[in-house]
Image (cartoon, rainbow, N blue to C red; front, side):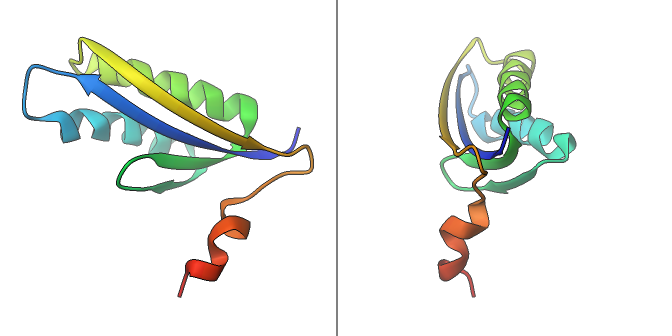
Length: 96
């Protein structure tokens, strides 16, 4: 199976003003996974094998709940090509 890009956005429901720290818990799961990723202001994009990325997304969602969210909305976008797709091929022309 080829490389895929998976964009993940978690929106936790919390009873505190500390939403960013809860979202940071999801990003920590992605960081610990070892896959290539880029954090953006609205979502984090990962690159790797699709099954692995989906599993990481599930773990990140669970981490948000474990960190105190009463519920979470998780938005996922997947770009998949059998021969693979990379973040660099989509963004290299915008990088200095």
